[in-house]
Length: 126
Image (cartoon, rainbow, N blue to C red; front, side, top):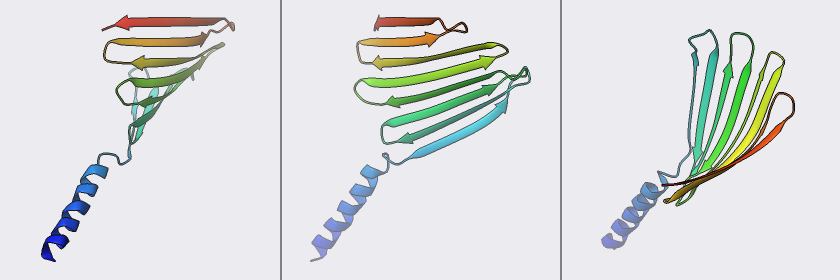
């Protein structure tokens, strides 16, 4: 009977050890920039999904915001969107990237200040 008790205890300990790395994580920090602006970054992780956000405010009131989400696996897949607004200008875009053991592929759609749209594709062999 004592052996069964030890087996249950060790099994429960094994489950705790295996579930420990899959727990959630979060971090955030803010700092001033050299030219008088401010930057804020945050990162969260739940299992193998990472999400982050960056916001930068310049001294002239211009703002830059970027959001990204990545899935960690044999092939890492990331999605990023950004927008930047300044005095009489605005930029925005989306990028999707897949990073495997042998190559990296990414495609992006970007919009400029006059509404012009650019589509880019990149493939790189490692």
